[in-house]
Length: 334
Image (cartoon, rainbow, N blue to C red):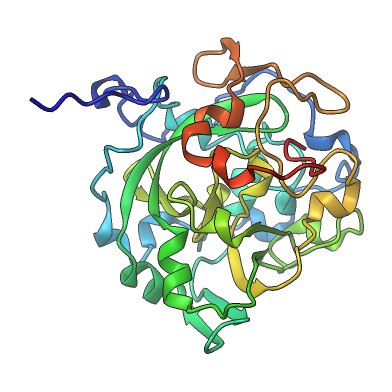
């Protein structure tokens, strides 16, 4: 008789909240401080530009050429200890600084919807057998798509649970054929000030950049996201390609990726450049290590509004703690 022991972070599939159809665009949430508290008013004078008032929405996921691939089959190895956060909440609560600094402001989702999803290419370069630039549809169709239920923990001490669709980062790593000298993966977000109004400013060193070690990138949990709630992801989630590394704070999950570089030197992320004392390379979740300006011991669940204890590595210690064994002197939780 085979007895399966559940991991501490698992929940039966029956406990997952069904998809909430995204109809409400005016669901307002309670306030939480800005990430890093940096330049909170930097975009105060940025109004809704003319292009954002226009009727066409080139970022409409209903027009996505890969629509036929959704919904993907759920991988039951990745489950939760809490209900999935309703879509109307996650779709309208987004940190996407290219489009503004107020995550609760519906302007973020509205502006992001004007960003064209196609054509979209991803450059694969650096220490690889062959550098190339590939259309996003070719990448998505070449990879084994699946749905995973993941927790998401923001450095700002709020959390949600999301049904991401995509593929393991290690699948793309194998496809890219990195050379032995590649120790890190550097990921870069789009740069288009005509579409993203904040990129016209000088507060942040655009484009957004962050990275992982090769060991982190090839861990089973590291995931490239292309969809959410059983369909192609709307732009505000980071479409058409974003990273999800659920044991790290959310700022590590690069959105709307256009370049993936295999490099020998550790990349310096945007937030690390802006305020390295508060936002480091590793950014692993740890309730015992506070942010310099607030505690990380608890988190506010966006779906229920409840405050719950934060889990070490966001509850994924069993899968990832071994990645950091023996790393004395490294600020692993910052």
